[in-house]
Length: 233
Length: 289
Ligand SMILES: Nc1ncnc2c1ncn2[C@@H]1O[C@H](COP(=O)(O)OP(=O)(O)O)[C@@H](O)[C@H]1O
Ligand SMILES: [Mg+2]
Image 1 (cartoon, rainbow over the protein chains, first blue to last red):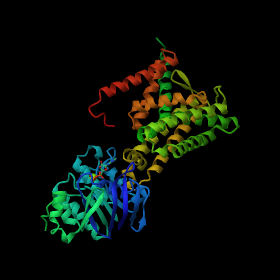
Image 2: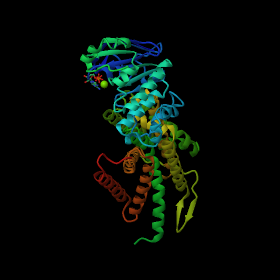
Image 3: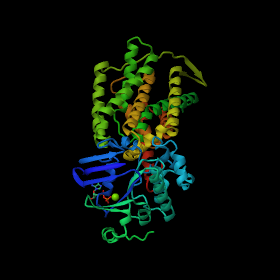
Image 4: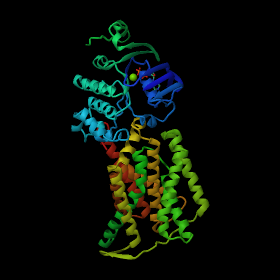
């Protein structure tokens, strides 16, 4: 559960997110889409506490977390995949997972279960992985932490289609167990597979919210804003 | 040529001095090497350990009490410095260097006010002369060397093998990501500072019986610690231990031929030369530590 009320945030007083309000119910998966520089990453960073908002409130699991230290927000069971992946170069794959054990004791086994390819790489250092391998690790770490809220910034970047399918399945599974998710992503395979709603972000503001069952009739809007086509089921 | 027994003594003394040197540098490996915080008060925390030892022995307390109190004093001061000052600006390098340099001067003045400008000394609690192959050696210094190397190896094991090492590395590399995995990075840094301070404070008390205690003694400890840490490869605890031993040996071997001061100058010069040569010969993107 996530509620964002009148959020404004940015860097050194320069507003990048300029008045965003959103509400995610239990188990809901919201995708945020928009062109480069729209402020999507800044919005997610503000939600997880990396940036303190200039104005507005953020409520996670019924608690007002505005201004909280990021580790306290994480301990409400918020799983975060940053745009730059956040893999620790000096820790091994297993070390990168084990470090998050405060979120879920069984995170290592759970991550290997979701993405068995990680187990083969377990002794490799984060810095020695390819971009795609790092992305799998980042995504696995967030999914395997058994989050109540998932916050993902372009999680499909650099992933092969079969892995994107497994990512989609894992998100759907978590969502069916009550995890809400806010995901910045334009990859159609992921969006159309798991989105309950789409939010369009332009210039720091949410300009449109589209329900899943209205994706078809809003095709032209999406195409114009993003160059996306709904080809799905 | 010097007689062979001097060589044996030099090798032995070099290893003992090297162990001590590595032990003194250990805290800097943690704070500078792993956490990437340039803490210029490291030498002063060493001096505080020695000063505490001298004060306790002056007050008729047993030397052994210093081995408990000195780490508490230095560790406590390190934690206070971190909490009141360094943490406030997120350990930003420029401000950290400036702030810790200021603190270095303040701590020196405090020490000067307490013990005056003259060098002080502390009696060793026990000091049997140990007869070794062809030479005799101070029993206390030998024990101090053994304690130094033992604790250093233990810290190496802890930092490499325990969760603490991973927490320190992760918090340094990407503080925000570590936080987002539920890690209180301020607390991790606090533990790092406390451990580093306690170790070097202990070293200060441990070495008091065979070193002069002086309000300016911290500077030499700081400079040598930086040389040891960089020589051993920044962030590598095992490297720090090896580098300490190598420098100790080099210094006592050169001291066979030169005055102690010249030997120190030559040792540091060789170490710096090696560091520069290693950097020039490094593969693109640097060495993988
Ligand atoms: N660390 C930063 N400091 C200052 N400005 C930033 C920083 N990160 C992003 N910005 C600016 O904020 C705006 C939005 O960036 P971002 O949130 O990354 O957009 P998006 O993720 O939608 O591409 C851009 O104009 C960008 O230049
Ligand atoms: Mg972005």
